Amino acid sequence: MRTLKPLIVILLICACTSAKKLPQEQYYAFKYYFVQEQRNDSVLFYLKNPIKCPINIQLAKDNLNSDLHSYFGQINLQAMQDTIIRINYPKFNLSSKSKYIVRYGDANQKIKKNVIAFPFPQGKTYKVMQGYNGKFSHNTLYSKYAIDFNLQVGDTIASADKGYVVGVIEDYKEYDTSKAWRDNDKSNYITLYHPHSGLFTQYVHLNYKGALVELGDFIETGQPIGISGMTGFTTKPHLHFNVKYPTSEHGLISTEITFENDLSGNDLKKGDFVKNL
Image 1: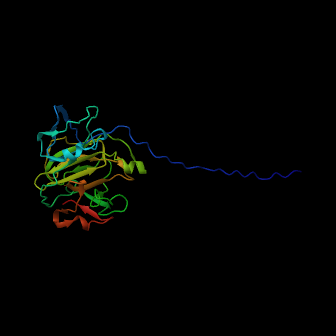
Image 2: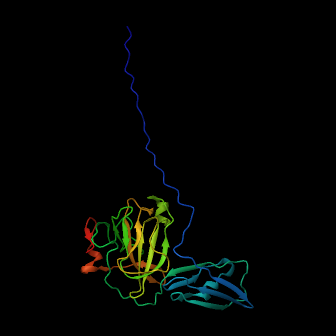
Image 3: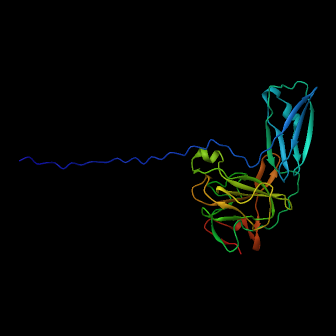
């Protein structure tokens, strides 16, 4: 009688994960249309600011007109302002199309910080997921004083201060945690400008079509402005809240702020619960 040996089957299960592809679409917080014209030995730039805050305009370097950007310099336009810049430049190469670097704010404006509200409705309580100088993503000039609150998909985002809507992106749908997503911002967010302080506030990771406001709207403190979501570079649903001020070299950079009830943003640590009274 033959003895049958037990058959041992080893199943190798490969748990493979792949990063989501970055969306091909590129959405912008606001759109601008600048016109240029060559007239005799000069180049004319017709510049118009379409939003209700100052903007800073520079000319990108151009291989065909290598030093034109240095003549152009930095142009500050106030809210809704337009102007014409004329530069004597007889060697201008017509085959080149000028590109611009446009940033929020006027670095010469004096900043007057004031106490602000929490970026969610009164009576709501949320946990701090990441505070100032967080190692995961709050470690650059642009985010070091941001605070992440654990708002869930569908929760209401409220304005932390009165001001104007100067940027809206709401058409992204996906999220991921790969380096490509970290280095290429594909999140939905709203930018508000606060003329009385000179500061900007940003509300990031909104839901698809999650904006409740439009470009140019005037917003009161505590007014609902958006629906929280999970878009861009993120591991969990949350609201990334950031207060910024303008610089000539780096654009908007993150800054410390004090909330109502004399609560400093620096006091908010990961795991703390915060109630908007």
